[in-house]
Structure formats: C-alpha cells, structure tokens
Image 1 (cartoon, rainbow, N blue to C red):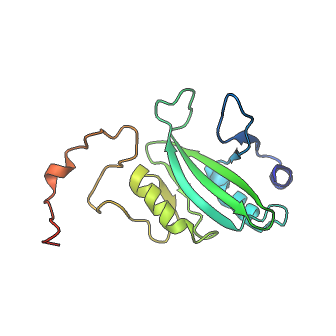
Image 2: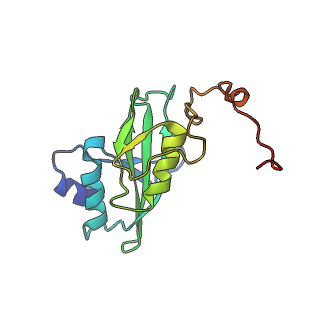
Length: 171
C-alpha cells in the first residue's frame, strides 16, 4: 500500500505510523497522515488503484488532541478504510486546527461518509467542505457548542436552562 501511495505521490511525505502504541507489542495497525489539501486526491487513488482498492469507508471519526502531549494539531479526522479485494485495512488521519477546522468531504468518493461527517461536524465542529447536507444530526440547530471537544465543560454551558423541557407525553 505504502509503495503504491509513494509512487503516485512522490512529493508527499507519506509514511506508515502505528495507530496504537503499546509498550509490549509491536504495532499491527497503521495510519498515514495526509494534508487536507491532498485528501480527496489521495482518497480517490486509494479507492480506485488496483494495488490498494479500498472499496469501503468503514468509519470516520475525530480526535481532539487538546492538551495531548507533543500534539502539534488540535483535531485529527480519522478515516478507516477496508479493502475486501486485498483483505487489508488502512487508517488515514487528516489534521486541522482552530479557528475553523475544515477538511474536504469524501461523500463524493464513499456515500457512507454522509452521516459520519455530519456527526463529526455536530460533535466537534469540523466543517466538511462540499458535503451535500452538512447540518446537525444529534443536537438541535440553535445549539452553538460542540459537546465532544475537550474544552466543553463537563456540566454543559447552561444550555439545559435555556431550552424548554419536552416531556414524553407532550411530544
């Protein structure tokens, strides 16, 4: 996989990095860091090239690296890819920062990204440029915070007191 990526994108610094670091076991899962500007081109290549053939986007999530030791970037958008043809997996990480963390949407490559990108947008505030319907999916439209950011207070920002309580019998 890495050889195919490096042959297609020789100017990019692409290397396999361990997805999970354990002190007593060697890594068996890897990711490649891709810059936001190259994300769509790399993802299309990973889906279409016969050497990689990642037909499925299994998962898409985000990690907030606020206060993480040695972290240079705030958010890591993580794409989990699966090749059924070659029976291999690869994770792609795309790092973005405040004040407006933005990555291109991969819904044009994998339709399965639609709801996952909406969820990351709703929970972390990462904007997916080009998404066909980027709106909140778990919170209401007027909600202005992002609950899974690490700077979100554990007891909320007072939003519970600002909205009327809807009881099951009233709904």
